[in-house]
Amino acid sequence: DPFPIPDAWMKWMAYDWGMASPAWFGWFSKAPWGTIYLYRELYLARQDPENPERWTGTGLTVDEQARRAKAAMLPDELASPCYAGPDLWERSAQSGETNASAAARAGIPMELAMSDRIQGWQRIHRALQPRMVDKAGNSVEEPELVIFKTCRHLLRTLPQLVSNEDKPEDVDDGQEDHPGDGLRYGLSRIPMGGGRKAEVFFGQ
Image (cartoon, rainbow, N blue to C red; front, side, top):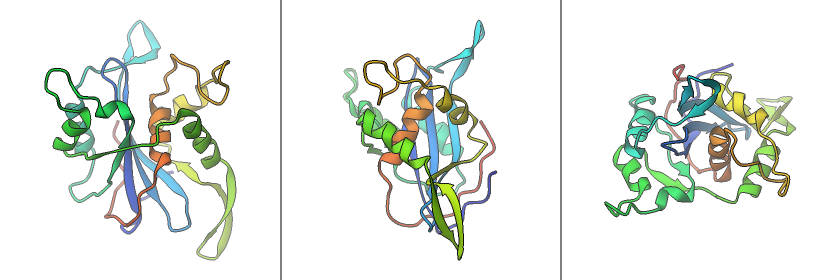
């Protein structure tokens, strides 16, 4: 269940971009006892009217997507940096600008995530394993990663992903893996430092 994220907890973001395919933003925070909470997501996608199980992209440009992510945040919220895959640093043939630069101009500064797919999926598996943690003197069992139930698209898609037959440590192509890709970006590098208050966002 969602709860208000304390002011002092560090917060950061992750982004898996797409125009023809869906795009996903995730907001992360780390508790003093080491648990990472995914407390918000924004899925820029639409359902195919002829096949409701299929989600496609919205056609929004990177800067438009970044502005929507910025609008989902509180005015005083600090969740930075935002980790993304290497394709965001490819330069446009027309403008010469990278998508990372366009996102930064729209208010979401980007940093390069660890992009090794197999290591990334292994990182997710490790983060979902239960372990004992000490919460104010109470020993409890919980995974390293806890996902707010409002992050419904990640919760919907992650359990449905199947392995690649040729590379069983990786997931197969052609799946709705955009939230999962964003999750592995967000877990691949964890920033140091504190943050300001990030309330729960009950939107899209």
